[in-house]
Length: 221
Image 1 (cartoon, rainbow, N blue to C red):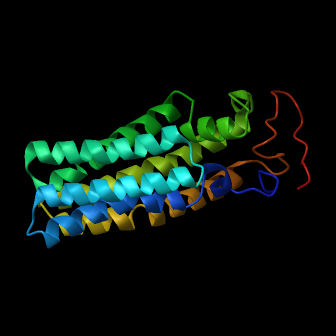
Image 2 (cartoon, rainbow, N blue to C red; image 1 turned 120 degrees about the vertical axis):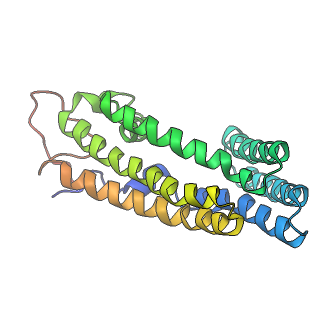
């Protein structure tokens, strides 16, 4: 089986581990602040916001897009508002549960309507827009690859929901950290393997959608 992209992996196209690791820092900071201050929600929130702001400032200095940084910081702020409103410490993670459920549904629906989100994301990253949809082999490969991402979000929910229901703040924090970068890395690797296995032999790769009726020609790396 030829590699579906010239010297690239899906991890290269979707981004590295840094973003996933950074996303887990504010929740960890929340749990630490909450615990050290005698289970004070306010202390946990202030610690999470401070760490979130520091991470955002660092990302801006590294040249990250301001919109992406703002969205990430907004997520921390929303989680803080929710837990301050409810007064239940574990509700800092409620937004995470909701977004994972919504993501699982969105990825599943995208497969059903034949616009698999993995294809949409990679297509935009490669500057192809929707040209990949004209290639039945790529459409099928992206659909199977997207199914792996559905399983990622379902896995998180299967772990998070019982811990949330049991008010296990520390356990939920540990699960949040453990299922961020490691699970994303596994998801990227497995979905990349699925795409490679699904594409027929001789397919030129992700960068070269084959028009209907055309004969696939392998593109050398």
